[in-house]
Length: 353
Image 1: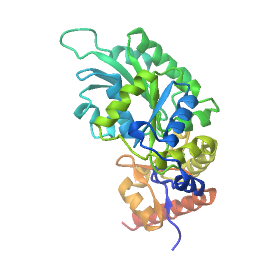
Image 2 (image 1 turned 90 degrees about the vertical axis):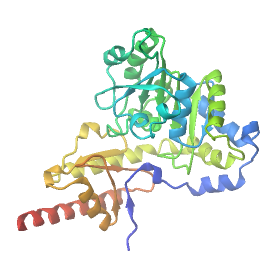
Image 3 (image 1 turned 180 degrees about the horizontal axis):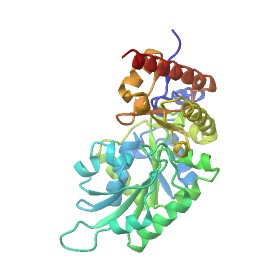
Image 4 (image 1 turned 90 degrees about the horizontal axis):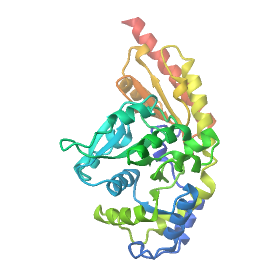
């Protein structure tokens, strides 16, 4: 049987051989005591890379977002989020259930909030209202299709937030995808936010981990909150070691994922019955609509799976595919051939009805 082409997410990436060797040879200590030299080095590298004072290794992107929201707010505060943001949709309501904050959602365009809408969402100081203290930006934006919030757009939102005394936090799970796609230094994006996180375990191919980055004061607060959430780790250098390699060697190769995503999107767009909004294919995520074929996304991905291609549903009629390390041009070409085969099969079934 042919190898499965797994396009569900860039979280399925496996560590490189160099990363596995780094894990074996990592110098270790107790990170709760701040004695793991490998973790300390990774945190220093992350802070420098993002142009911030300090960083904190956490277990996941979801934990990073929760730790960061809690470190930026107090219980009862209101937080402004883009309506389709990952924090709002996919993190089990943790910011309300655990952080105790109230989400105010703002519908953006391709994942980008209009500064005027952000300003309108800020609750005035009134005894009846929660105090609005934080604005969250997601970059790249998952549900919008991996779209980029440009440095200029971040600054415009930040200017509004600062005028009202609000903090700005960036869920930068795939921030390096944005930087590589626009050929900009990642600091161009981070300089307009107070703090942020980024993932090691997506396109950078690490097996686990994310980094929270910000001021020394913010990271000290985040460190204690991480402990409350059960995220204090001991010999965490085994996580940090591949992260060091990721920051040194895995960022520039994201461009290959973007090329493959564009190849996939353009190929899908040529198939009758499938719709792709090519404006949204800016990094490594491709969404395509199969409603023109008269089938559901669940039906379509079931047919894909039978032929060795894995994908996810984005909505009732929308399919999501994500490119990543391990997906080569030949896999994209094979996927397109399989999609064409499925479309022929569906059209034949429709004619027989």
